[in-house]
Image 1: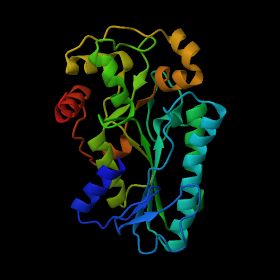
Image 2 (image 1 turned 45 degrees about the vertical axis):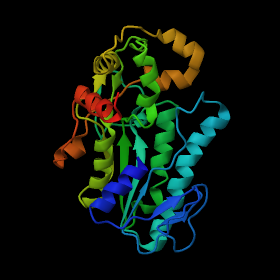
Image 3 (image 1 turned 90 degrees about the vertical axis):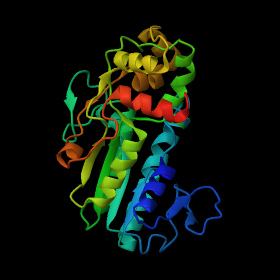
Length: 287
């Protein structure tokens, strides 16, 4: 998503500097290890910083070492950038977070004012957002963007699902009643741009479609867009036994989120409905 965000910002006339872990030949890119502070003065002259750093949560079972990596990669990078923003006089810090903040909430309708929940992901998101504390009482405008499932054929959950669904083996997970708060990748990028450019936005902002769906409806919509059946259920007990907390929190827990802040700000979604989001993504990818 970072590369897409850079392209959109540059198209809108912004000068973009990327902090990169990998070596780059571009003079606009600067090296940075998210586990350490940026070099002194690295952010001087920047009006806004967007932080999307974090180890993928679905990279494998949550062993103790992987849990630590997931947490530390988010908390350390956020804390370092928050302090650097203060030192360099950056006006806006837009930091990623996730709907995992709310834990498993069944059918409860959630918005930015809803309290946090429990579980590893919720605890991680709370600590992640608390790492912004250095800028909370400053002149820096801080925005915490709580992303839902970002739909993209280039990565993330959807890319991992596609091979299974193309074989006609997709279907509801558990009972399929858990809510999925999702967003088309282009809308996720647009929400970040809005958070950068709109001075009225601050604090938590949900970056999700206004139309969350139960997981069984998610499965049916993806199957229809691919022209495949999506009837093969995956029992909840099997997922718990095989995947443990990793499978339970990622696939069996749900959040029914309403993006109140973006709606009140008049944000326009490119793909507010799930079927049009799938059709758009799969058409572009040539599937």
